[in-house]
Length: 537
Image 1 (spheres, one colour):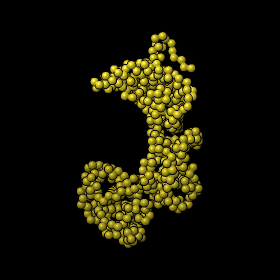
Image 2: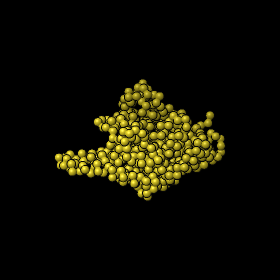
Image 3: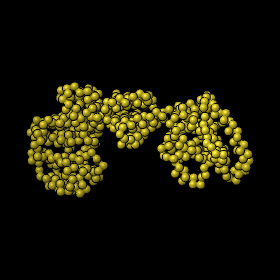
Image 4: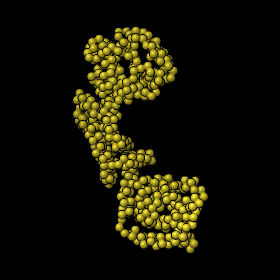
């Protein structure tokens, strides 16, 4: 049976360790100075070298011919450990030895001196899996271990380790490896295996490994199993079910450039290629997250080095210079929302198409608002302007007779009636022109115009128009910042009334205004009295 790559190329001394320089340097210094601790804790993500360094440390402290803090790999001690024949190096998987009895057995063997080595070393992997009783049983041994014993505890979940244990060990935190460190190591392995792998293919493997060398080596072994002497990026994408960073970057580049027809064409191409859209969506979300992080703080590029190469980092930095933070955040929210909404859809790419369509609609909203506010008199708005003046003239007299009375009332300390009376005429005007407001949006944002058909202006309170909708979906669409601004601009342009808008569902409206009586437009009241219906030309 062939040996897996991560076992075959496991480092045998400190010089072969990839990354973790802070850990290696500290351990080597302690070995050189003779200050060997009796309990260590190695904490960090999986596949980052915790067990490998624990074995190297155990080998080094027992080596009889040390060279600058490195094991010689030739003495009897080193050979015995390398061959796995040493009885003094004990590895325990805490996941399958979680009970108190297991630790009690360990405590009994700890008392026995080493059979052939200088130190007896206990490497307890996944130590966080021990039960509370087992930790208590281990505590006394860690507190006063025999001088010939060294404990090395390894964990991926350090927060589960009791404080009493943490206070008795020297802690070392392992970090994820950078993409470039992983790629360099994979190149060496591919060369030793006499396999040619495209640089982009190595990038895909490195990015998929999430900073873990063991993960990367396992993925490379999976790819090499093809028995193909020249491995391409396309083959790696097919085997791993992933997509290249370049594909994601190009996809986002088209989104940033608002080239939505091209984006839809790219989605169709991805569908034909048989890509796993679930993985594509996950990669796309992660890429957008990286953009968001770097947009807020460009200095965090170093923190993302385990995910990105320098070339990809430069590409993201260029893209974020062409997009605002709220646009990135909106893209993340829309994509995440649609991923959940269409989770069980029979059409795998639907969540992506719906997300792109939503972003396309919203990206046009600021432009639409600007067009509405600056448009020259042209149908249908030009024809509405004459109607606006006529309607305003009809409504004004009803309001202009009020001021003296309202002023007198305001002296009594009642400011609210002024707002109420002053707003009633505005509400009449908005109700009279509501169809015109919807029509004015049709050519700019047909979707938003359709949403407004399912909503009705109900009252004006403190210069805010309260719009009532039936469902949360319509309320959410109206209250999206760009959509809200577009509607406010349209109302201002057509009615001459400068209002903010607020959308509520019918249930929310009823709870907030329990005594409200629906206000009808003059036109609607006439229809109710004389019968008939409103007909638009």
